Image (cartoon, rainbow, N blue to C red):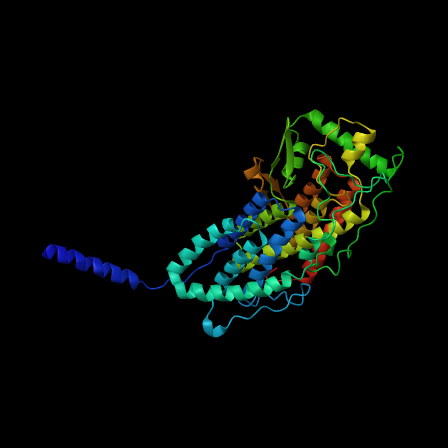
Length: 444
């Protein structure tokens, strides 16, 4: 009996000691932000977001996290007044001693959840992290969460005024079948042109969607001596040359590595299904993670890199889509099948929107320019972004060289003319340079 009382006494002491366990400060590392961004990327793949819409899903949560952290260090300055129509977020009260890094990651996850379809997938990550933080220091967690929700409300109000909801009700793109130069839906799905009204989305740093309107593509002509016909034949000839080398050629590897088509239709007999991948913007967001880890970036530097790059990507899509549906140029696949070789297929599946300019080129030009400003030129990195999709690592000596390879991959893939690639890369770098000029950090 005495032994039993002794055991009960020890048990009570252990329980009391555990209840009186001192709260631990909650430390947020850059890896927590990488995990949150990776989760958003995984959900985007599952939910099949188009490339322009995916860019919107990335950028707003990053800005929310950035604005919270901008209060903590003199090296970061608010984006209010630098990003279009963004006003100052509610300031954290000094007396509450809010953990701003914790508030930033909570805001990132909460705002991300509001932009995706499969919210429950984000909640799994949230629930796991929240439980850990509550156990370590419930008062600190609750204070940070309350503040994060105030900021999320503010950013949501700004976000909801970007015309996205209005574009959901606008009419589908009308195909002009009378003009042989105009875009037509391509096999195998013959999908409608996606996001024809994306140029109506409020820009972030650009003065307007047309600020860097590119030069006009070569005049449409099927005369053999014309510049346009030469570009058309280049697509056909390069494709034939590449395929003659076999599936293990360097050019095919490059084309597949940078494919980044979120919805590839596959036909097997009477069945059609889709394979899912990351979008072009998501690939560059993956490169942000690689560069941040390699440079041992702290939380503020990591969030800055994600934010500046995602703004560059978002504005690049608005700029590019403005031109795509203005020029409304027909794809090489359509013309080659109609006039050169009815059995020809591009190495990559042609995406469902007009040709000029190349989205990969514009986005890669913008993202690489932002990343170069942050991490420097001649930044060597090993890009393992496509490993989950069965593709090998590719190594680059700079972000600009990676962008140039991403751009030319569209020629190798048989889905773009030369002008769309070269002019698109310039267009993207113009977008990126403006963002670098307007948004500067003291540690860059």
